[in-house]
Length: 218
Length: 218
Image (cartoon, rainbow over all chains, first blue to last red; front, side, top):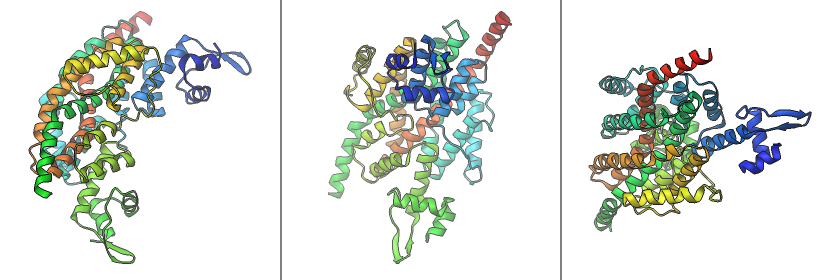
């Protein structure tokens, strides 16, 4: 099909498709004349994947490019890509100089040891954890650092279900694509469901406390 | 203290502090002369909170402003703010016209009913869920939609622990601040721990499958 039909089929405007081509997110079509190329069902599939990662997963174009490269050349490096590429993980410079950093690092080290994980303290993912623990301590919210343990336990239990689902696919490309989609869109789905669970649990409780506060101050 | 000392204390450059003042994230200091203002410990605390939300939580400046307004004027609207403000939830236009939308909506409606939640189908958070289910179906990954149920159960169980921790604070401002910090930074911490759990569980399994694939193709 030509680019106009690719646009109609996917609902994505032609200039956006050309942008994906220029940025290397979408492989070029087969050139049929100096000004025309022909696209296939694989291009339709890839555009849907790009839109899911960018529009719903919240990835940047650079993030999506990295992730798609991992899908196209599946190997163990996919974990490195996924551990750094995420809507929420845009921490570019981690400042390990504050005085709260060292106890936070010890705390995260203990957590990783107690879980029996192999992660190293200088991995980007682990540095994000340490940065989060440092910030929480600085904000006087050590009580929220205590949640890291139950969070980790729950992630492990959930990961068993997730890996089982993704691992049902025989094809290694399908498996990696499933990991990428499941990780990126899963973040968003979990984040939304987490807020809905909070709202359902806390709304009544919270409304009661606001009324009490109003009575005191009003 | 003057702005220079506020900068030294927080480690945040003066132009950045002035930017926060202009954007309304930081309340103005007490004016001591036409060109000078005096800042307090509350300003130090607020700057730490802004940095945590933006640098670690990945919020935009607009997102941080909305969240801080909820902290300053705590009421039930904090849930609405938190349900839409998040690094991953930048879905601006949800397109409910595709043919996969309607079954995805039915699926999400069933999920909400089975959980006994009060959420309405036209809430932004629920629309994100429907959009994610639609995208997963379009990508041929209905198996990943099946994970929504365990995700929701898991979020509910975790929410009980989270709400208990945050609710320990007597002051309503502290409670809302804890909700905001816990929600925004919790997203990031969970996202990192989830990837670490995947990596730990799947790396060996995955390495084995890559080797098998190499033997077949090599």
